[in-house]
Length: 418
Image 1 (cartoon, rainbow, N blue to C red):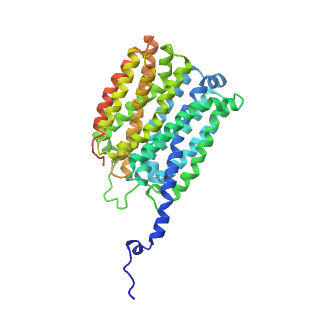
Image 2 (image 1 turned 30 degrees about the vertical axis):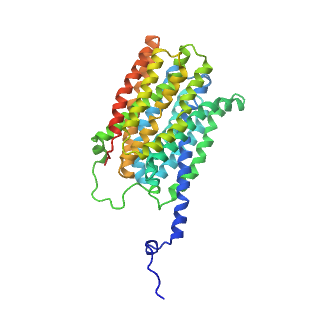
Image 3 (image 1 turned 90 degrees about the vertical axis):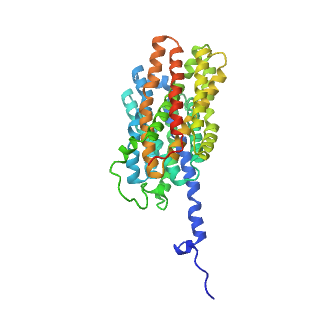
């Protein structure tokens, strides 16, 4: 009897069951690795604030050093993130993320052991460097591993990021209490969570059959572009993404750093101010997933960017006019507006034609955006200090929503870079 014609899989030497078995475990592993990594992208920052007073007293940290520490994340994200594409080309995106998770774990374990303020600030650079690299490369892994579900997977890991941030802010003080009031143990405990991510990403990096397991390069590279970075820097879509990312980061850092104080200065108790701030963070958990899923199904995200900007404009206007009149409403409006972060990540993933382009675009948009975001919180603090109230700072933040909307309209158009 004549044997049947081989299937395409048989012609390549792989049977259908083997292909299914080979592919089957990679998706869940990549999804689990993404979620665990995302949870670890903010505890290094948000766990410190609740115990900063105790940290300053123990290590002899001045207010100036504390201010430097507050600005350190944006500086690290901007400066170190630009190295991510080069490292990814050499070691693969998954391999670099595995190293980033290890840096976060080691840094969080060593930071509480620092004896002085200078050493504490210096050691803090290590976990922030790991976060900077992972910030840039997670959208790349999403593009490579889930090319048909960029929006949904971006929303899922953005939700995990928000969950990690809010959990660290809420749980660090109880953890410190559980360890007898020792803030060093309360902060150091977050290293365990980062350590869990290392073997997952190590396994993903060893998977050489997937594009995420090796340096991001096309199978047929064709002519070599001698200056992809300079070409990207001349692309108006890339600049629109960078501007949108930077302006939303400015708003996020102002909310994180100053919103509780705004409510306290309006006459609310410290407990109420903390609860209102928690609302802005926790809203991002479900909304990030929903927004990413919706944005990923739309070829044009300009309308979403404009809508989020209008929420922010309304929230700042309400705080400016009557902060104590409807504080829950203002907190909800700003919480919705802060979901521009997952939208920015989704747009980065969708504007690149392939994984290599997304790598460069993510590094450019995030690094440039974080550089743009550094002056905002400082200027807000200066206006508050010299003006004596929040009217000028809030007017500034409301006005910044207008260029954010404009940048979002340009970045959200159905265009691709590269």
